[in-house]
Amino acid sequence: MIEILKVLVCMPFLLYACYADIKTRRVANETWVAMFGVGYIFIVTDLMSLGFPYLIRNLLSFAFIFIFVYVLFQLGAFGGADAKVLMVISLIVPTFPVITAYGNSFPLNGVPPIGLFAFSVFGNSVILTVIVPIGLALYNLVHNPLESIRRPLYMLTGYLTPISKLEKGHFRMIESYTETDKGVKFRFTRLGTELSSNVINELKGYLNEGKVQDRVWITPGLPFMIPITAGFITAVVFGDLIFYITMKFMMM
Image 1 (cartoon, rainbow, N blue to C red):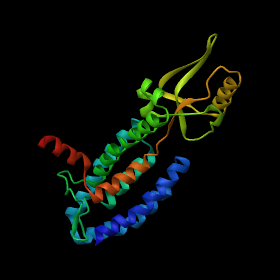
Image 2 (image 1 turned 90 degrees about the vertical axis):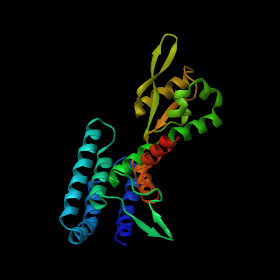
Image 3 (image 1 turned 60 degrees about the vertical axis):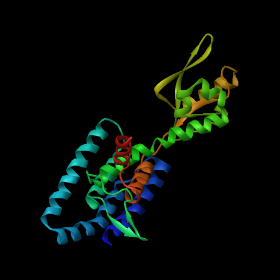
Image 4 (image 1 turned 180 degrees about the vertical axis):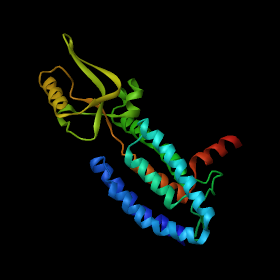
């Protein structure tokens, strides 16, 4: 019963974090303080019932996740909120919650050998982000098949949008651009170009002068809190996707 409550308590905070991440690309620190405050009840309850071994296991789980996400944060792999939510999850749910409901035992794929729940949440979230480029590719093949086939890297990372409808938001151009004597030249860049007011106005100016076509490739900034939440749900219901894929590959 307590495992179900842990999951149910975490979900509202994760869903709110998704909403905040979509709207502002920021999640207030108070969210994780409140999440830990509520989850602290379960930490104390487990400590009282399981004793010293639980405390050691919890501290080791937190230490591993802390070092892991800190390194990734320093490398710029994801933001501070993403790191903090994984650390809080590692404290509230240090090991896989085993839940029996409706005649089934969850996770359906069982508990992986490395039973660090937060680590599996992260692994699941990384795998689930693969859905994004697949979705973009399908969208581009339907709406802009010729451009997509001609630029396969573009169709996996972004989509075409009219310059005349560009607005500031959580987007980046896939390309950079330079005005030359022969017109405006675009080229692919790894970091892209931020769609600031100056950039948008300049592009619209080029459009009005007939120097560019009314379309540019842009890429949406995916809030990583969404894959983390999806990875959390997947870990609870199904299990560790990396472990599942590895076992399937070994059996082949």
